[in-house]
Every structure is written in C-alpha cells, then in structure tokens.
Image 1 (cartoon, rainbow, N blue to C red):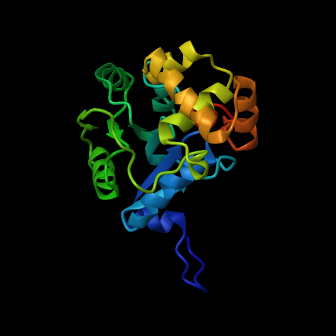
Image 2 (spheres, helix red, strand yellow):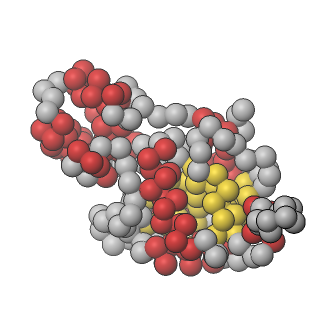
Image 3 (cartoon, rainbow, N blue to C red):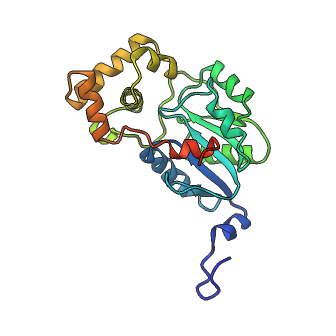
Amino acid sequence: MGNPADNTPTDVDRVAAGRISVALVNDYDVVVLGLARIVEQYDDRLLIAEIDTNSTVADRVDLVLYDSFAQPESDRHELAEIVANSRAGAVVVYTWNLHPELVAQARAQGARGYLSKALPAEELVSALETVHGGEVVVSEQSGRARTANGLDWPGRAEGLTDRESEVLALITQGMNNAEVAKLTYLSPNTVKSYIRSTYRKIGVESRTQAVLWGVRHGFEPDHHRIDHWRGGP
C-alpha cells in the first residue's frame, strides 16, 4: 500500500481504484515505449503493468497486449503459449495485418481481441475495456491499415516506414526473403520492394550491410519479454 507519510498511491492502489492493468508485449523497447505513450494518455482507465523489457511482472495482469511488430503472427504457437500463461488475463493482438485467416487463428488460440494499429487512441482504449468486460473485439478489415499516430518503431527517425522497419528487423534476425514474406503475409515482390526502398533510405547496397546497420540501430530483438510471457524465466 502507499506510504501514509506522502499518500503516494502504489500500483495495487491504482488497480483497486478501477484501472485495468495491461502488459505491453513486444521484443523491441522502442515499439513498446511508443505504445506506452499512447496508453498513458488514459492513465485514469488503464495501468501499464510492464514496459521494461528486463523487468518482469510477478502478479497477474488483466490484459496482455501483444504487438506483432517483427513477431510471429497468430498462425504460429507463440500466441497460444501467452494465452496459457496463468498470469495473463485476456490476450489481445495489436497488428496492422488483418488477414481473415490470422484473425481466425488468433481466436482459435484463445485471443480475446484482434485490434488494428490504425485505431485512434480513444478507440483502442475503449476496445481494451470492452475485452476486459468479457466481450471479443475484432477490428474490421479495410485494406492496408495506416499506423496510428504516436506509435514508434526502430529506424523511424531515419525515415523508415513501419513496414520497411519490420522487414529490416526480420532481415536483421537472419530471415531470408521467403521467410519474411511468409511471416508478414506479404508477397515476395512486395518484400523485395520494401528491401530496395530500405536500402536506399539507410544508404547501403547489400544485405550484409543492411544487417550491420540494423544491429547498430536497434533492430536486434531482446526476447526477454516474449519468453517471459511464453512461460520462460
């Protein structure tokens, strides 16, 4: 509880006051912190329980918001492992990929929400509250979703778009073009197009140079957070 001397509320006090506790899950700090800045505007309704990659949460949280940037989509097993975590309440996928198959697979693995990154902040928070209330919320598909203002990603300061950044992150992780296409549900030609535009923006001419640039500029993931919510240490 808070210190009686200064009346400073603790996290327990805040949750008790009616806030929904949310863990933001992604392997890239810049991605999580960008999302945190959006959510923190509504700190009278939501409590961010985890934003530091290297600081885990011991207690149960109401919601886990899984940001899919450079992560496996819902056609793989990671999401089910997060859902199975006893400390995770409802699990919500936060993505720009609204492919119907991915939505169906996320639901089959137990996700209670599948939300577009194009949602304005107020609609995102309202959707999280609706999920916490026991309903399932799935964003409507409306073509390629534009990322909502306020989100962040590696390389944004250098002019990379969210999609270019994700492709470079996957390349930095060692994936080839076919693997990137499969993971992102993009066509091989589209992946090549993103790679060419990325090379031009960061001033490199080869994949090796791009990977080295990525390593120097924060494109290597820290798997601590994902592993933690998948039941790891």
